[in-house]
Image (cartoon, rainbow, N blue to C red; front, side, top):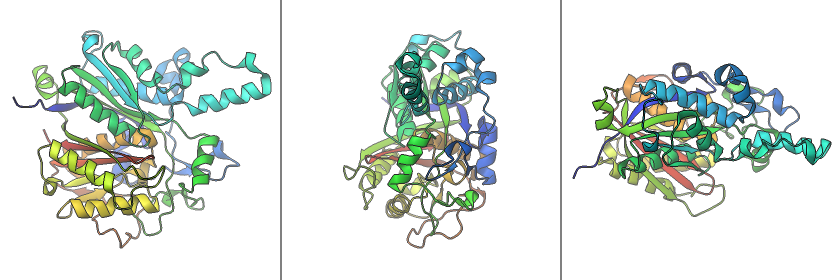
Length: 406
């Protein structure tokens, strides 16, 4: 029996490019970097970040709801609302028992933890908020989405570091293929730009120090790259079986045709120098999609702007994919959205297929000559039938989505 096709029928985005799919995609195509000096990081080792602009949680979610939610949940709910509306679904009429939620994040709500830890130290334990745990626990990402939409089916949060958003979409796809659900809200969200988290990244040497020119700090694949710029935001997609979407008259925006995951089993933070796990995940995703490596026309790369990651990824792409697929990293615009990155970039892959364009890699000035890949620095028109969206995380966790034209 033929395996069901899994459709993307709705998209929702909250990114440093803007609130909503339209603003986020426009920023990606314009190659408009979001990096800036962050007043909240004053006194830190690195003060660069990519924040979501003009995000008014009280206006979007209501004052009482916003007060009880950490930003990582706020972002996800706003993105999920957009995705559900885009899919033409009405939660008041669906069978909630057949609706699942699978979302990813790397760290939950560290901003809430840091704020309440200061309260503990300066005012004592009786002044700590009783909401500290329900606000910051990672599982509340999916739990609050279930409450929001009446989704009583499978409900989970996955944590594979910066691969979390992609892992969540792959896991959601599996639930649909196994007939555990009819609809799944899938994606990732992150709000980790806090003094403690950023100090940790800086001490590891992972962040760009290019504070004199923030707009060029995130420069994936550039010969002079020196680290990533941390971002925040969320990406949520609605997944369902394509036949079901078409039966209700919904638009099938794209297909999640394949998914691959693999571990480097190498190092806590550094990628395997030979790209072992990356290659395995790429090959698995392509095979799962019933495709051949030569069929890949575009790769939305992990492309973090760190020296080791970009080199390992590019060399693996060159080795595995024949021809010259167009490779781009939208992190030049958004910065690194950490656990949300894979979901946002998968959404950009869908939009590339729909619009027949590949976004530029902002910040790239001189391609590292060791990479030998084709990286456009301007919007490039092309018919795209198959996109790979790559996501890799600390601990050597790799996830790759193969997104296809329906």
